[in-house]
Image (cartoon, rainbow, N blue to C red; front, side):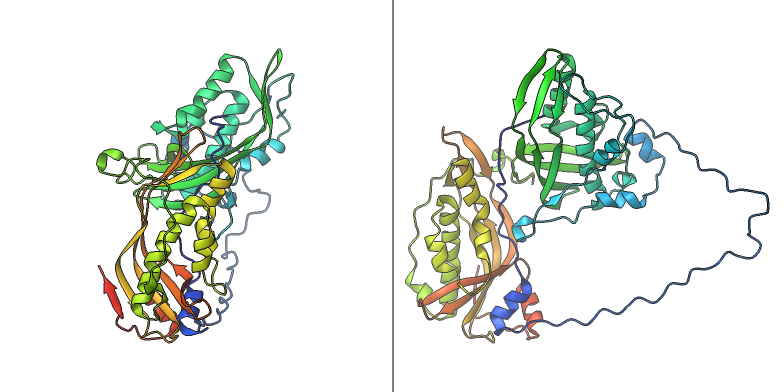
Amino acid sequence: MGQQAVSGRIIFRPGSQNWAALAAVAALGLTACGSQPQPAPPVEVPGDPEGTDQPEGTEEPPETDQAQPGTLAEFCAGDPQVQPEDEDRILHGVNVITGEGPEEVPVPYFEQLASSEEFQPATQQSPAEGVEAPEFSALICDSSTDGAYAALSHWFEFLHHAELTRDNEYLAQLHMEDCRDCAVWETDVEDMAAENQWLVGGEIFGELYFSMPMGEGFEAVVDLVSDPYERVDPEGVVTTSVGILETNTFELVFDEHQGHWRVAGIAPGFVDTDPGNDSDDDGGTPPGAGESPEQPEMPSEVEEHSPEGALAAMDYWLEVFDYSGATGDMEPAEQMMHPEWGELESLFEGRLELIEQENVTIALDTPTEISEVRVWQGSLPNPEAGMVSGQLVEGQWTAYAEDGTVFHVNREHEIGTTTYMFIYNDDVGHWQAAETGGNEPEEVFELMEVEIPEPDLTRD
């Protein structure tokens, strides 16, 4: 069943939180109000035009079921129409980094087999019988994001079909010829066929954790999950498995020649597929160039109730962000998080889970930094608030397993415009982080219905 090394949910990106909350921090509870949606006008359904009634004694021509083409390319070349049931494959496109829960990848093929009168699941005595081909969805022929989600759904269907039949007929169509790591899945099926082995149980499901367009393609980070299963042959059980929990990054591209979405790569873990970042030959920092960071010391400027103090708090927060995420020591982070605002703990969850569940050691190769900084403090409606915005780059870090081997590399990543709200807490005598968001600060001022003032402080 492909790779079975448990990689865990190691996704981590500092993402946007609640923009209304950001505005509330800056304006002491002021939030934007929207108008109530208006009901849509009723739609008139026209009757049959005169003269179009069916003549007496005639019947509607019977509907005929046409055989599905054997390949996706032939299917898409026929310009199929999207059916209502195809839309069940469309995913919302979650991002757990911003607080959304995972979304299960729909696999209608499971229901198709369950309703089949011919299908007999595999047992220890015999492989599955009466296995129908998965029904193609016209959405996969659509070059939109919906088509990419349909391809992801089909991948789980085609994999299940391949493992039931021990034949890669459909799975190979979905994999690009140069697909990275796709051969792992196809080879496993081929080995079962060559050795007359089959699987009992262990259907693989997918949980989407993150998705986004990537250049002309699409990227989706998915947990592969299965129940326990057995691998058997005519002599009995060959191996058993407790199941799978594995994170993979799917790279999908629309193949203009074939007319449908295909899988260009399946990489274990969460990886940065940006061609500018995924090679050490382009000047990027190689894994393992750093070491576990030391605990930073809070600068005295963080205690200053001024724009300079808010900027010092931003710089110190990023040091704490790197340190606490790499070591699991959350005390400095807790000192910098305002107790009454936000849920900034979520920014650390991915790495903390990795440390606790996989017992890894994390070394910081490059620090997280912010540039093109603008600071508003004295010009905000709330004199206790400070807003710092700039271009954020998340540093690179490497996780090592207990034996010293590299478990995971989180490449340096350009997050882009990020805005933080800080509150000066008189009880502790220094600035504390309250909220963060991922768009331009102008949007916060728009929510507050306040004209955008000039920044109190800037830094390249």
